[in-house]
Image (cartoon, rainbow, N blue to C red; front, side):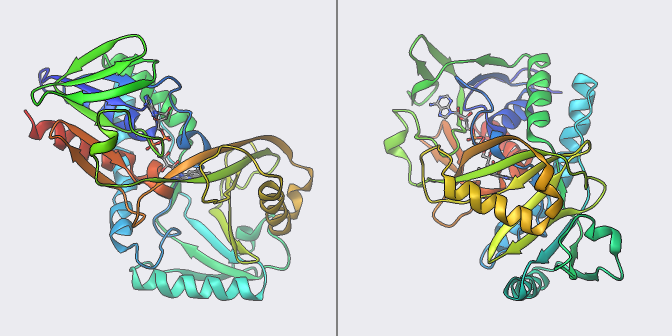
Length: 356
Ligand SMILES: Cc1cc2nc3c(=O)[nH]c(=O)nc-3n(C[C@H](O)[C@H](O)[C@H](O)COP(=O)(O)OP(=O)(O)OC[C@H]3O[C@@H](n4cnc5c(N)ncnc54)[C@H](O)[C@@H]3O)c2cc1C
């Protein structure tokens, strides 16, 4: 670790702000992190998949290339967390099994495979006959699918908890207050809450899909819109030793991220809305699709629903925007913020180092 280099103020303690705080603190920066409700944004709802192969989408080549480096970056973060706290951040490198529920859904899997191959992913065709175990719990209607290497998942709750613990050990100050204004006089940055004003050398905005504070809100070029998503958490199905199950069911995407002990994250809905409510139809569709794909979920217990706002930029790609030289805005992570957090944190560090 280098010597202390300066003060950085970070607004927003989701996965992006919390990981950036860790990266900067590890490099010797004095960090103050602001959030009235740390970890309560989109990060709270996320399934935690780091799944470049399953996430390929036409037109998102650059994003895919970025995501390919994400798992290695998370491995580095896990090693550093262990170093600082003695605790292990678990990364489950399971790969993905993608299946289609009906005939049209199987065509979607075929189309996905063609796109994936263009991205350099090699989907492996598997059948119930050749790989019976992989289809454990999956509806008998599904006879085949494709296996995708290189995908993994982590538990975002664990990641936030361990990063927060590590940050505390590294001297990061967590201010549980909402930031009203973020400004600069050219040499320093200032953050104003309802209670206090804080001064630093450099600032990072990691507010996800939420509106930026005054002072910077009207000075940015990028636009971020909220895309609401919901996950349903159930207890009663353990496929944790198997690849993450993803599917097209009646044209909709579905995933079942199964953790050891029978806790499963079913996801996810996607609505162009910024209001955090759970609609009956949205919940019904997700549960019906999940039950059709995995009939044994019938007797699983519902633990909770979680919903969050994905921060989507115009081109659905993440960005780092420099505002008035001293503020960097890190957003646009959309479906991939957990995946990309360690790589974005490196960008936060480069930005701060560049201003030294
Ligand atoms: C249902 C769902 C499932 C998902 N699954 C995955 C997945 O499997 N893998 C993956 O990689 N990504 C996934 N994502 C996407 C991922 O969750 C987001 O891209 C990521 O969480 C964005 O992180 P963030 O830190 O930018 O935003 P957030 O997590 O929203 O955090 C922003 C934080 O800023 C704080 N804040 C905002 N304004 C202020 C202010 N003025 N002052 C102080 N604090 C402020 C908020 O309180 C919040 O805590 C999913 C998203 C959803 C909704």
